[in-house]
Image 1: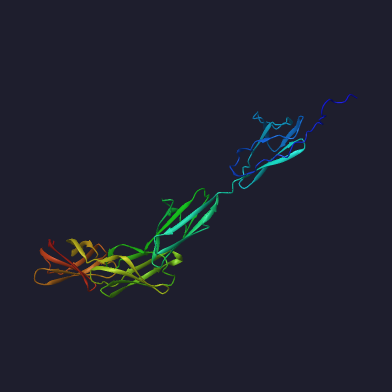
Image 2: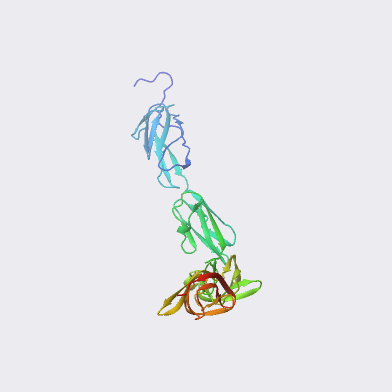
Amino acid sequence: GAGCSGVCQHPDTTPEQFTFTDQTGVALSSIIESNVITVTGINVSAAISITGGEYSINGGAYTSDSGTVENSQTVRVRQTSSSSYSTTTDATLTIGGVSDTFSVKTADVPEYTISFSSSGNGAILCVPATVILGGSSVCTMTPDPGYLLTGLTDNDSEVMDAVSGSTYTINNVTENHTVEAVFERFTFTPDNGTLGTVLQVSGTGFGTKRGKVYLEKDGIRYATKVTEWNIGGSNLISATIRKAPPAGPYTLVLVSREVGEITADATFEVMAPEIDSINVNLVDEKKVATILGNYFSATKKPKVLMNNGEKDLSCKVLSFSGTQLTCSPKKTVVTGRYTVKVIVGNALKGEGVFDITVP
């Protein structure tokens, strides 16, 4: 046939290799666009197609349909990243039989730091200390002997109610956490009393073998009767004051076979009897004095004396509790003014002056 005039050019639909720059650390479930490439090396239209995404020619609308592209036109591709962390997805563009893949990898699972500290007198350990998104960390609090956990904050919010046993669990972690534990010396209630008063001691680290509880003052110790010692890991000790030491403040000392001696920070006050009132009435034609007050002893019968200014007249105790006594006065007790004395043990004495009417 007829020849071509000038230089004959064969149709070339195979472009030069093009390259998309892969991306890492991208956001989840997001549309990610590639860099722009320019088509070179063809002299006629070439077929263009994509899998796993869409392409745009010369900034036009994105499409996933196959089409054609001309030399010197620009192409950009895009795809939607994975909805999972650390996951790679691919969009492969093919022009005239030449391909390149635009890969995007989502960010690694976020990691969060669990920081922990204590006020002293105990330890806290949170494991693991680095947690991935949605994970959990378990914090274990270990008080020193004679101390107990009295406060726990997580990012400055009090979380003591969430403590189970000696552990606190941070679930579904979505941020950094700072956990702080406060340990304080063992505590006891009440803070005062007398013979028969039951002391309730709360704390940890006393061990499970029954020890001793003392009231101590000026180097002298008065033993109490221990009725309960950390039964079943209760962290509770019960002790009854069974000997009446002199009134005043005392140090509470625990002696544990397993951890030695531990002293409380607060003091316990031994109280002398306090008399508020006395009334004498006839009961079954017998005179009975009723004395109201406090710290009369609940376990050991007190003594009651009524002094008429000349001598102490005994009043035989009929019944007693910590706040009320009844006694039978001597026949020589008549209407008048008396100094009434209540004596508990040998050391505790309370008295008051009352005008008494005797029927």
